[in-house]
Image (cartoon, rainbow, N blue to C red):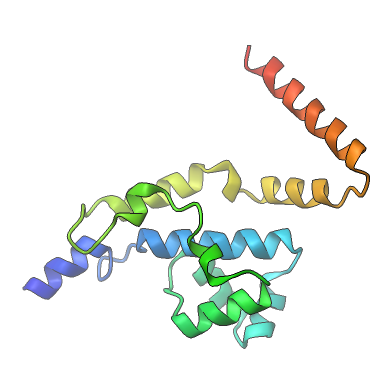
Length: 151
């Protein structure tokens, strides 16, 4: 009975991904996309299918420590990268915290503009502009357009 209660608190055994796994998976996707790497290419590099990479990126499957280490090497980031920018409510999550946390995290991930492919492709294209002054002018233009749409 206690074991089932703990599973409910963490999201495991409920069919819902744990919010930490969702966050780590989103960071894998972010880095892979910024590098212009396909899920298939990443999977090949670490001995997985692209379907397994998809499950990791959605947080549906938990990434073990050895696999996380492999991912950090292939994606050329420190392991800590996968935990960077974690929202406080997720980083504070423990087996004793709120049951609804996994649901809320999945919803906020879906609404997060940084999780969208369009955003990642835009950032990657932006950093492919070699001339710093052109990049700065594009940045200023985007900010100006955003401020006019807010009015």
